[in-house]
Length: 233
Ligand code: XBP
Ligand code: MG
Image (cartoon, rainbow, N blue to C red; front, top):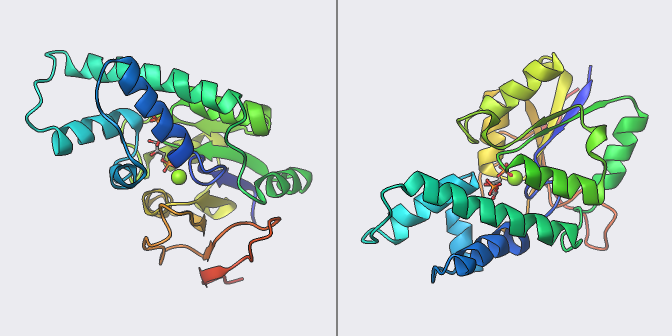
């Protein structure tokens, strides 16, 4: 029987990447005196790597191979990322990023039905809290698995194993909501069933492991399209 819903954050609860994280990365770069600018298109490629610090590292390796990097590169990335997190929190606190359609309704209905709720994300905890404080209520979520709490980020299943352990539930008791291939891989490898709501960055990815793939969860003018599905029972 279904006992809990587990939600990814970025791209699933809200479209945070293009107009949220990306903007905050660019603000942090400018503030640090770096002439880097992550365009919408480039950011789509950089999403290949999850985790903000990991994404900066990947960008340096792939796009700035000749760059003279500081000896303390890790510290440099950590402080750059800390600055990015501040900008991102400010952006969310301003209300710039709404929830995706149907999310609030689904979460309220799940609570009413007595389902338990949890979060599994690679994003840093302050980012998750900023979104939940502005749009839902952090207290509704019994477990919030976020950021560096597990070293191996999605597509590794670790964050889902962490959340399952904290909930003291088996994969069969839970249903996951994700928006990306990486997220779906993480959940699937943890033995979890997943519903995918695609977005602009993820719509062409492979979601054959999902039990259901839709364009959104309803409550919006745009027609709700079932892209694929293999619901049983
Ligand atoms: C989210 C991410 C994160 C955010 C940035 O993926 O990839 O890296 O873009 O977050 P998912 P931080 O939705 O699969 O969890 O900068 O806080 O790391
Ligand atoms: Mg996501």
